[in-house]
Amino acid sequence: MKNTDVAIVGSGLSSLVSAALLATEGVKVSIFEQNYLPGGCTSSYWRKGYTFDSGATTIVGFDDGMPMKIFSDRTGIDFHLRKLDPPMQVHMPDKKVLTRYNDINSWIKEAETYWGGDAELRKFWKEMHQVSKRVWKVSGQQTQFPPSKAKDLISLVKNFKPGQLKLVPEVFKTVQQEIDNYKLNDLKHFKQFINEQLLISAQNFAEEVNKPFGAAALCYTNYSNYYADGGLMGLIQPIIDYLEEMGVDLMLRNPVENISKENGGYSLKTKKGEFTSKYLISGIPVNNTVQLCDFEIRRSNTSKIMPSEKLYSAFQMGIGFKGRLNSEAIHHQILLDNKIQELDAESFFLSVNHPKDKFRAPEGHSVANISMHIRNPGNTRFEKEDVVERVLKELDQRNLIKRDSVDYLHSSTQFSWEKWTNRAFGFVGGYPQYYSIKPWQMIDARIDGDKAYQCGDSTYPGQGIPGVALSGMIAVEKLKADWL
Ligand SMILES: Cc1cc2nc3c(=O)[nH]c(=O)nc-3n(C[C@H](O)[C@H](O)[C@H](O)COP(=O)(O)OP(=O)(O)OC[C@H]3O[C@@H](n4cnc5c(N)ncnc54)[C@H](O)[C@@H]3O)c2cc1C
Image (tube, rainbow, N blue to C red; front, top):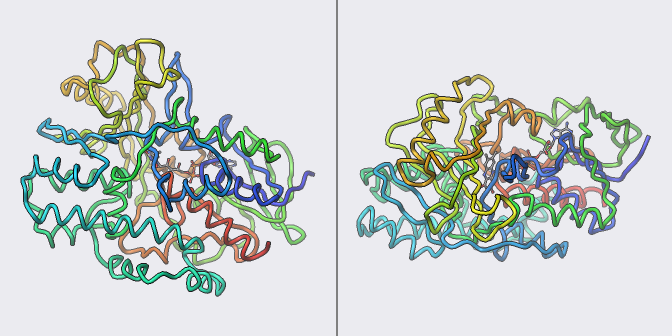
């Protein structure tokens, strides 16, 4: 039986961040990953000469005070990234294209070309941007949030800055209330635009998401957006290299099958044998954590586990095609004038490789990742072929990817996600940020009130690269505050 100080389940970004932070402090860490590749939803895979991203394609969080920047500063890991401007384009149902410029004033000007120079529209975006800046500032300052022990409260007080309180009343408003407030409901396709932008970054809609999380989601294009050559593996490879350098044992193809408490620590039954650890960090969704653990998990966490009905998976297509996308942006959201009925979907997301990235496609070719949401993945079944047909038609009609340029295509559903990540129902994209669940009521890092911790996109603050990086940091902060 092998032993380690901290056993980490999964090698998604949240786990990798927590592992690297612990290794920096000289803690002995072992990571158990069931897949043959690390990275989970931020990984890449190869088919017929093309490199596809497993899930995430857009990268944010490297601006000052944001989680990936804090992480990079603490570990000294150097990420090689290309800055994108513009970060994204949105293709409206009437086929007009809106460029989501990085600079907020340029974006507002662009929005005015479509929705008119309404002063209320300008105020809405200014307000959202202001609130999103505050959200990121506060989350970088309060890394023991949400509080579940007196010491977290002490840390909250210690890191308190007067501006932080301004966010409290905002938590009691929804994005929809702000749309009502600024009287923007009747602008053409505005609600669809907002809802579909919220869906990709908060996993929710204007009526259901609170204003702070909604603002951060709506304005993610107004923070520096990056691209990693080689795909998302290019983002996580520097972390993997760092872990190797620091002597962290990353075991691929080694699923954890059961975890029990033993001698004041934990015993992990894995495919490749038994391991013991003093501490545990679970970087898999809480739905999966409870299945693995033989010991009691805090009721304050188990009572918040979401069923399939409240979650999403992703339908995805990987396309290899001749030529390049005729656009200045590599990320595109396509809003549909009539839904894809099978998935009740009003949009899909398209990302292609950066024109200067020579690693992901053969010379003269490009690679595209397409994704859209699958509601209630545990109970939804549909004909993939019909969805594929519809997407290809939209891409062709909008002159994005011509049908006759496609030379490789595959598609996948929640079942592939279940296999790739082992996540319950193949749900991905994290727990939606529901207005009814206030940030301080979200799932906390402390699993059992003892030496086990949880990170990842089912815990505070939720999904996305900066979100899960922050959750990994919080798990480490709490573990250190409790024991080290
Ligand atoms: C289609 C899609 C598009 C997205 N787009 C973006 C985007 O553009 N930008 C963005 O910021 N975010 C995006 N996201 C969200 C983001 O990718 C995720 O929220 C985040 O990467 C999740 O990280 P995680 O560490 O919580 O979990 P995961 O990435 O799910 O990692 C969990 C890991 O644990 C492993 N595992 C599971 N069970 C076991 C076990 N029993 N034993 C050992 N290992 C186990 C899994 O194999 C996996 O590697 C997207 C997600 C998807 C699915």
